[in-house]
Length: 268
Image (tube, rainbow, N blue to C red; front, side, top):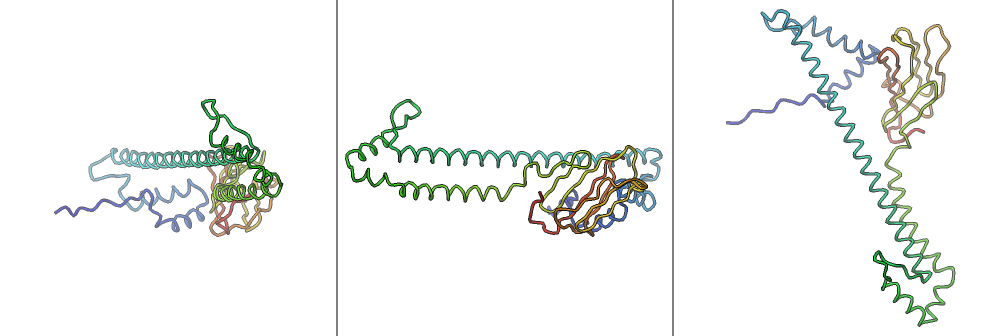
């Protein structure tokens, strides 16, 4: 009886996001957040001790386990990044081909209206266009109908409208160029539809307790305690303060994660 169930996959389990978000807001830093996890394992489990009789091996096994889990998630991150980049390149290639095809059709139509016989790829004449020119020359009334400016304008109006619709559909999906920006000497920012990430350079060995960070729904203040504010700027749009948080990474970089109030628009 093969009723064995596969173990759950916790690598993408979002059931605990709310708990960890609340914990991150309280600890205000990646290292303090990790401290709470390992403090719990140290005080409330035998994670570091290992099974009875493990001796020093228990601690070594614990460290190896942490390294293994960390490497696993690093690999997942890199794989997802590569997949996202490949998808972006694919979309750009599709968009480029559509644009080239539309321009080619437009040129062909303009040449046909002007009575130009275009050479094909082998250096021969395009028979279909040649016959259209012959018909036009043999039937003067038809040629006179094509000469007034109103007819080409009507046909041209029909063609760009279709192209415009295609362009609008493409432009609605991708984010602005660079997906963010840089304010020299102050910060770098990137975004998704749901949140904004701001990276602020700090002096080496800066800790969270050394900073004054104030996030309001439309304003941001950042500075080292006892010093002039590094950032005192209005936000372009509104954020959800309760869902936004910040951390100090590598002792030299402040990273703010700002949750957008409107999660269906790009910031500029």
